[in-house]
Image 1 (cartoon, rainbow, N blue to C red):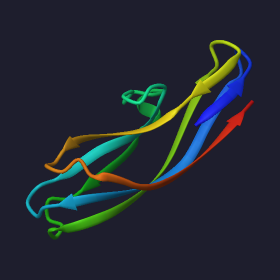
Image 2 (image 1 turned 90 degrees about the vertical axis):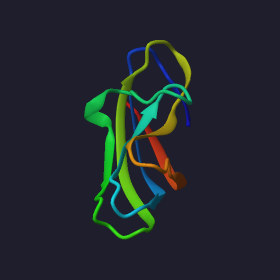
Image 3 (image 1 turned 90 degrees about the horizontal axis):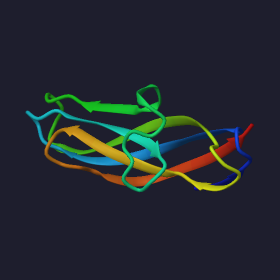
Image 4 (image 1 turned 180 degrees about the horizontal axis):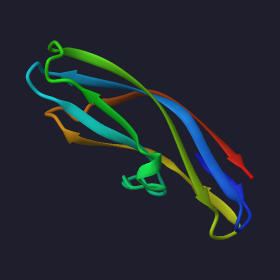
Length: 109
């Protein structure tokens, strides 16, 4: 998502993401979804804004749909366009999963 903002303005990115995780019974799947400033930024605005997911090892072997709301707040460092990316990172589990769908909205204050 690309946003135009003046230096010093606050940019809030909000939305919902739907993930598909191929879960295997006996393994825990866990990870984070992050709004980043590059396609590989899995830190984003910091841990307070990470959307966490966890699928218990006791869950059945199947594809699990995970729905997560997300939010991140940034301050524009310069005037102009800034692009934000929705990124995900697995911390535990054998399957990285896929982004099925997401929506994002930006608010500039």
